[in-house]
Image 1 (cartoon, rainbow, N blue to C red):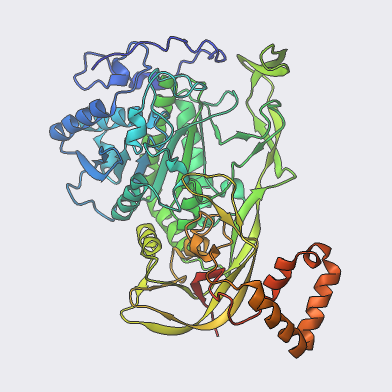
Image 2 (tube, rainbow, N blue to C red; image 1 turned 60 degrees about the vertical axis):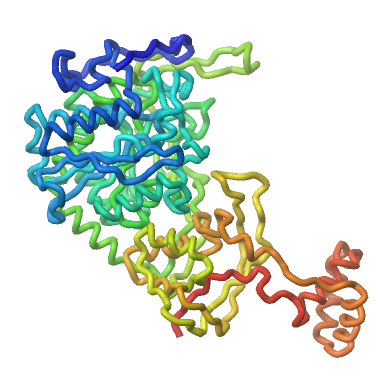
Length: 589
């Protein structure tokens, strides 16, 4: 495998990396080992192999070991196979009684630590005595999810990250960030992941990333929704992760020379001690989706300023420890999953925003820094000094709160002509009831009030928001092929978040139902003006409403077109489907 030169910029602009030496360095195999990985074979351990070399290495491992199997589960926009590596003693059919760990790497391909760690660990299972890890648990590793982004590689992908010296690109070939696609399911890579998740139902799902942002002592940070007892859609799962996984994981990482820590997202890059927040609880991210879907999900964010080797070895220890924990405590975790899957809250909280006041003060192991006058920016900038601060920082932590509460209906009806949305619900694993004939039902329809279209695109969509809605109870006929989507199911919360238009994670919010914004049929002034005059003469209440609006709104009073439009909306000629959301609620009677 060809070696690549160092970045000609030599990362000279990055803060100095403190010297690190940990017990986990003993995991690195010598070049003489026939199964040495490209990462290990590199003199600086600062290299990660190409897609083709990674696949060839795993294919060779598949042929050499009965424990390892490579499985294609999707195709990227540029035609590359997306593959998983299954490690098991069960053969082709995994024993459902065994807990399963799913480790996903390379959703952001520049952040590729998990791939190199996974290669080492699977090799050690196959040939170096760690096959016992698979006695009571199975592993599914996705070495690279964004395979096209992985191959848009070079030395200039992530300027704030220390290695590997050749890195993949953050977005896909269609310029999408897969880490924003867990709800809308736009991209073939994410659709493939959902199919894989349905096939291999994970008891623990680990999503491996590398941080952006500030410097600090921790090398492996990780977190999950509901950490430290805060509110969560899956409280039993969060409790297990808090009380069982986190203490054991931290002990294991520390024993191997790593410094584990909770996820940190700084609120002010010019004031490192200003505080941290939870990074948002949105379901478009893996941890938010996992909480809503009741899938125990951990987001690893290895520290970008630590050397690639240190990050890879920390990830190895994390995955191995997770396997041991699942083998020992997986039954308890399954109990937590079952408990959370049985929850049916009457109100589904949504649209979380950061708190204005901190939830608590967090101890933090910081790195020394100073301020200097930058001739480039013309202001004082932070200069990290690469030395551990001996003083523990006391830093405020800001949580999030819901700004919207959505009532849980009995079910939703999605019309057959929105087959695209129905297919996305199926990919999520939502249970649907397909109508075999046309069906007329009394439902609650949602009327949008003053929806707002975003002024710029985001992730391939022009988003739409609506703060206020009204409802109308109507008899509505749904054609054959439409679906009834009950909310009395484990994914019921997810259904509400996807189908309620006010939810910031809904199909509507992502701009997928724009047709309701278009009004059909119009009326000219020569027709509406005399009709409006007749309406005023025939209806004293309407006349009073009109005169009150004229008095209260001078701008409206001075706009002839707005005045006539006000009357038109109150005639039976007006487009009844304008702003009428096509997905209906079934509510209790």
